[in-house]
Amino acid sequence: MQFSNPFVFDRKLDRKEISILVFLVFLPNILGMLNYDTGMGFKLHVFQLGIVLAALYYGWYGGLMAGIFGSVYSAVIMNNPYIIVGNAILGIVAGYLIHKGWHTNLAIWAAFAIQIPWLIFSDYVFVGMPMNVIWMIVIALAISNTIWAALGHYLVRPQVKVLQ
Image (cartoon, rainbow, N blue to C red; front, side, top):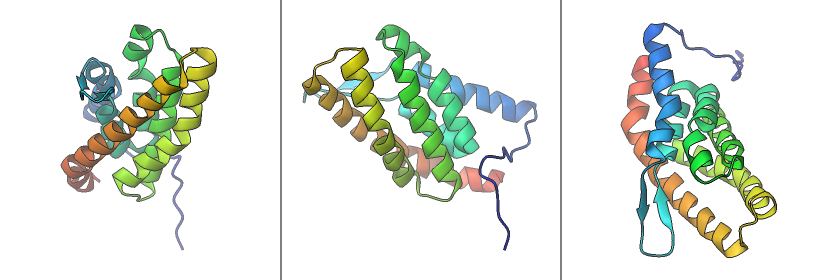
């Protein structure tokens, strides 16, 4: 039986790969500028698409890097540095699970389930948000995560298999 170490970065990092990784790591900052008002009391966020793409292409490492560096814009604009930790959790867990063969949506949902306690704790204790606002954020992120994970999976997953 052969075992693989999911914490070993198994992609050859040539100039092209580094360029793609850098782009995907900073893409969530650009996408973080886009939010769509649903008219139902919350906004759909787009930044997760960048984290999903980085996790699909580069596993836990790409997801972690996109979660950390891709959250800088949102953290600064919202004056909430704890967003970086939450998105790092989302990215690393999703990337790890995708690398282990989980479907992208299942990986994102599991990662989000792990992220939720941090989100609630940090937004309530450190930022001082009321719980009704936090629950709206949780709903918005759950819907956004689902949409962008599905889109990322069906657009990128076949390409990732070809590249490997």
